[in-house]
Image (cartoon, rainbow, N blue to C red; front, side, top):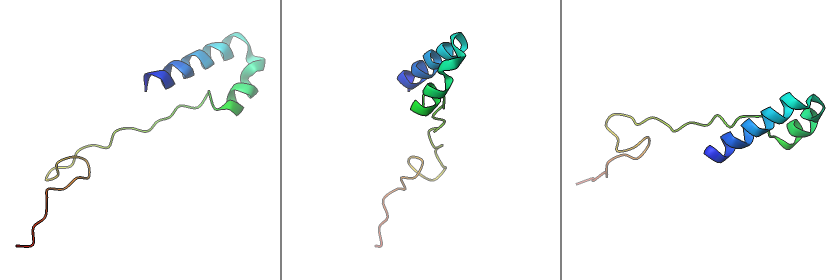
Length: 57
């Protein structure tokens, strides 16, 4: 979310100012972006995976 983006931005700024901090930032995982996205909705379904209720009879 926004907090993660802010954290990444601050970490990148710190790295740009002081390059010797890079190993510590990398080890803490602050320099890697979480690139998960919302799964897109499929036609015929209510959401990305939620199908309409199924009735046998």
